Amino acid sequence: MKPHTARIAAVQTAPVTMDAHPDLVVHGAKGAHDRSDFLLVRVVTTDGVEGYGEVSATPLWSGEDGVSARHFIAQLLAPALLGRPLAPVGALESIMDTVLAANPFTKAGVSIALWDAFARTLGLPLSVALGGPYRDEVPIKLSLSGDGDRLDKAYETASRAGFRAFKVKVGLGVPGDLARMARARELAGPDAFLGMDANGGWSRAEAGAALRGLAESGPAFIEQPVAPGDLAGMAALRSAGLPVVADEAVFGTGDLLRLARADAADVVSVYVGKAGGPGRAVALARLAEASGLDVLIGSNGELGIGAAAQLHVACALPRLSAFPSDIIGAHYYAEDVLAEPLDSDGTRVRLGDGAGLGVVPRNDLRGRFT
Image 1 (spheres, rainbow, N blue to C red):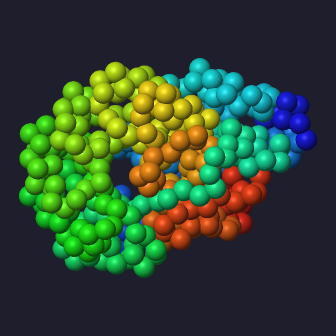
Image 2 (image 1 turned 180 degrees about the vertical axis):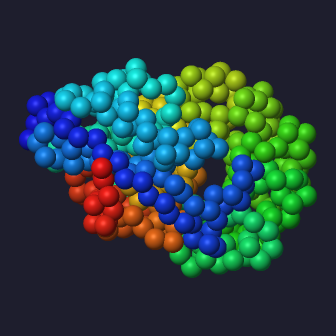
Image 3 (image 1 turned 90 degrees about the vertical axis):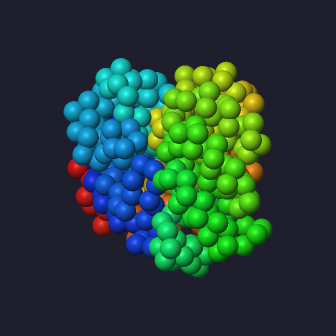
């Protein structure tokens, strides 16, 4: 089959709600994430090839969710794509931009499905279609949050699943942050990889006080310590010697260029959703590298389809940070959406050799697409 002759025959969606594992619910500066109301996407080509995607959208991040995504896909994106050539996928992404402003996670869900269909048409893994792979496995970490027994239970559950690297949710008040990080270090041991994620919850003064108090817990990095727009504050905190990871501060190329000019971070957390799709995520990561920044793959609580897209993007990058990425997939949820799970043991996730994403939704979910 030839991708330049295939056209888009259908764009379909299926709402899906998944509860987080009760022991692993994330409690951060932006609230709790105990369930995901996401949307799966299926693209069908005139050659009969099916590609799958996932809209991993939460309103606190971008003002999107599964309901808004389903509406915009049905009313705007699908009509704009139907009948158009499958290749180049970048041209289809540009078309989506002309009919819908912003909404990067919604567009990313469709883009993942388009890239999956494109790579399946070629008979190649998505990582190859994106220019790789440069590796066949990616080290991962899991978020720990909560206090007291809740934190202890989260660590116990994560450890049983095989996780040995973590980041602790802070930015909820300095005294509690200090106690939470100290307890996490006690649980994980002196040699475990342990970062911190404030989700922009600290003021500059709080961040400075916290970093001084948290030094004895041996954090590996601080992620988004202050508000996303406070690049000067992020740059000032780098003088403390702890690597700064930019997350909410970078959605697209304009954000990244401003961050680089401000010398405000050491590492950028690149999301497939924030970037607007796999191809754009790879391009954003390459620009970060050219700007002297390391890259890791961040998470918005993706389900299995989204996690597969994260994995292929990570493997398509020439350079990936030594800090573990957040490709957690089914580990975070009480159940998986995939017919066959990704190969992950909690310390790393491995790339398969199947075409496209190399995964498909469960049969019962595949019957929901309309």
